[in-house]
Image 1 (cartoon, rainbow, N blue to C red):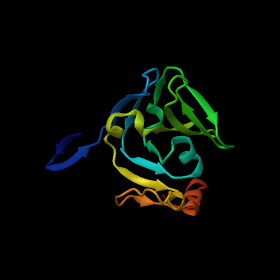
Image 2 (tube, helix red, strand yellow):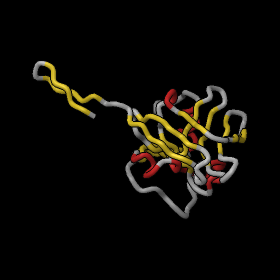
Image 3 (cartoon, one colour):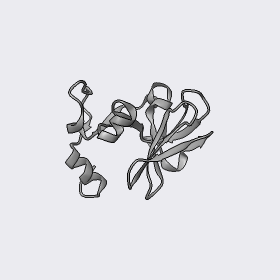
Image 4 (cartoon, helix red, strand yellow):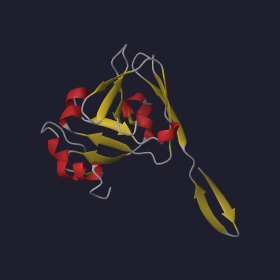
Amino acid sequence: MGQQSCLGMKWKLTMPEDIKGQCLCGAVQVQAALSKPMLRACHCDMCRQHTSGAFFSIAADPDSIVVEGPTQSYRSSEWAERGFCPTCGSTLWYGTVHDGARNLSAGLFQNAGGAPLKLEFFVDKCPQGYALAGDQKKLTSQETIALFSGGADG
């Protein structure tokens, strides 16, 4: 980030930060830009079954995502797919099929791309064995579904 000055006024220019990552075996390389770095955690039943815990995704600029290497996806519901490396099985993304959006797995990137945790989905589904500390926004199942259906602000 840089600062510019114009007639005594200062403002910050926010440039997207490029991040690069890979799956466990290195067969899949991922690159993306982060204009607003943010981690999200999902505690829904499918994410927990898929990852053995919460699924952490990083908010990348959709048009910046580049995935190179062999990938496979599993259609986990009518509206979603889960991408993975066919060699090592690393989770690559959670995607919505209606628009092709990919929510990249934060674990692909060193230090989760340096992004802070800002949002949790399905907090009422979080197992009793763990909880995430912090002041991030926490949405219940009802609030999450309303958000995804366009019925709530988020």
